[in-house]
Amino acid sequence: MQSLPRGETRSVVVQYARLVHTAKCHDSAALSRPLNTSQIQKMLRLIDVIPNADLLLSMEPEELGGALLQLVKDQTKGQGQGMFNAYSYLMSTSDLQDYNQGNTNPLRQAVNEGLNWLEQCGFLVPAEGSNGQNGWRVLSRRAHSIQTGADYSAYLKTIGFPRALLHSSIADPVWLMLMRREFDTAVFHAFREVEIAVRDACGFDATTIGVPLMRKAFHVDTGPLSDAGQLTAEREALANLFAGAIGSYKNPHSHRRVEIDSAEAQEMVLLASHLLRIVEARKPSRLAG
View 1 (cartoon, rainbow, N blue to C red):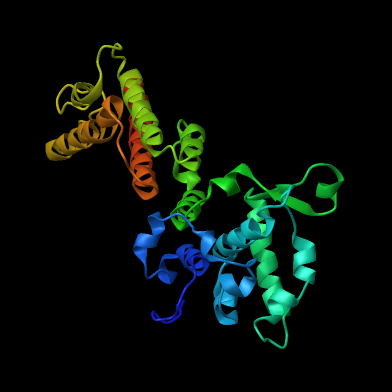
View 2 (cartoon, rainbow, N blue to C red):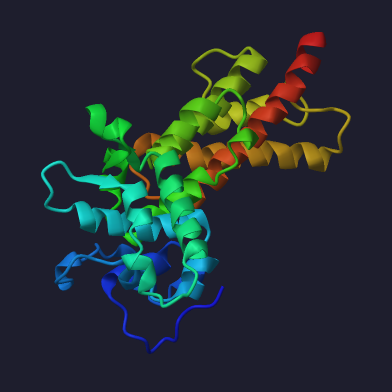
């Protein structure tokens, strides 16, 4: 996907549109800056947010949604009820005519997809009463929480996370924590469940915890979860994997706040899920023995 030339002047809102996808952003520092709409003296138009038709038509609905969210925020700013009607906006061709395209139907289709995506994801919700029944929408709490391009980018990464890969014992709570951007809590919860699963599988008491628990459970010679059919080096490696994971990812989160981002948290909870599946696979063998 091609970006506009580096030298082209960009408003803060054009930067916002770029930030929904890494390939559109040349100014990485802008990710941490709050959007500054004070630079804009008039109500935004679509062309202010997305400067040309080719860029608009190349954007996926979720990418376009980020730009449209800023547009809706600007158009509802200062309104008593803060309502927005997508149908009325789409039927008003003035914004689309700014692009000087003879046929505006492809542009209208793309914008409609972006607005529908915002509604499906809970950024736009029906207004109260008959207004909502007649197509009027208001910004949700989630929409108001999006203050920077980084906020929106983090949201996209979270909803794109493969929830089905999470172990069933942690899927629901960990998913919600990730959605709420409670990354350190999600990681702690996931690895605490690993610790509990290992202890329960081995029948150890509650005083056996942390790294010592993993070393005991996967001890090469005496560990209940160690597989005697594997090579000694492989059994040692698995013991190190469990001990290292608990020591690196569970213990620090037990004692202090650890700053991690969305991608790191997702990788960590996937590791926890993998460890949980190993324990689950070995538990029947222990019970059968």
